[in-house]
Length: 235
Image (cartoon, rainbow, N blue to C red):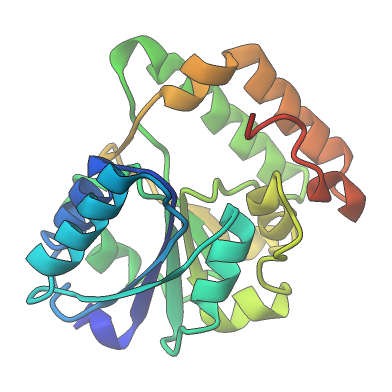
């Protein structure tokens, strides 16, 4: 059973129905019964808090849900990871939908990797952006600085802590800040077309802005102060 191997940590703030759908699809994964899901929530909207309550109530017989206080993604993931006692940990965003039902079961068999991520699918008119990101991600590996989006990071827990864990004072690019420390030979992009997410980041910020920030992350990979600024990402 996956519950002996894996704990899932989900940062969440005002995600509304997304958190319900996300956990609902996790519950449909093979060998998932009883797995621990830590939701680090920082919601302040009544509707979102209601969806969180419903998520805990409706799925409590399928998975073990633990709701803790959240914050910015880095702090939420860090606080969640401190409660993990399994050999592996999956950081999953609340708007990431696992539609391939045997995905976690198959990834759990990859025993020789420190960090695994996946490609994403989204609305048709925005899928080309993710395919460009796939190329950027492959390039990052060749450059020796793997880039795994925080929306799906499947870590060997021991390796995660050896890389220092998430840093709670990082407000931006915290996913690259930690993933680029992984040995490229121990990093894998698991091929699947069964992981869906919304294109809201591109719609809100624009494609050029997002890729420009990724390039800046790479240039500042050895500059810790860069990641402690939000760069207007949350505005």
